[in-house]
Length: 239
Image (cartoon, rainbow, N blue to C red; front, side):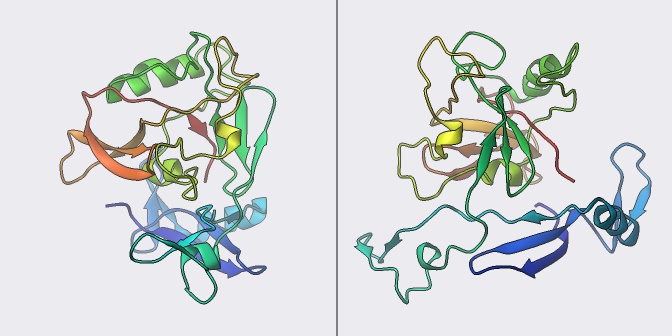
């Protein structure tokens, strides 16, 4: 299972929570992935405070309420997600270079195109090839959009862009990730999302020949054999 996040939720304006903190921690320490040496919680939090980094926990996007029979009802007094809308309103910025920045999490996402390039939304990969083909290509040469630190998102990051207000068959994303998608269109001109499985970098610890995926036709998280083919949307940034 995923380890818990270190930090604090800071009350903000109504309907918003601000997350202050960074990497997963166990017993007050974490391990730097590059050095494999312990990093104290205090040192990590001091670094984040110095950089002024704080991120809002995204809302789900849900604004409708349903009863147990699946009938739409007034949200007033229900306590459902559609009434409370906890978290920050989903907000994204198209950077004009083939990337989208999540204004809440600070993550930068690859846009997907319909032009036969490495960004094409029809490209599917086995899990290993998501890293050694897709990500390696994005980070090769001068990188993509001026960056060479692209990666496969973890399962929590991938779930953060699901818009849970949108119904089947999706795709369950805001228009920032799904607009103008008709061939041929370059990554700077359109934004495409399949209503299908997208790989995360997170393995299933209970069955580690599987990795977690998000199905963008219904928002479900699932686990899939690493030999199966799924789509990939790269991300960069994060603490």
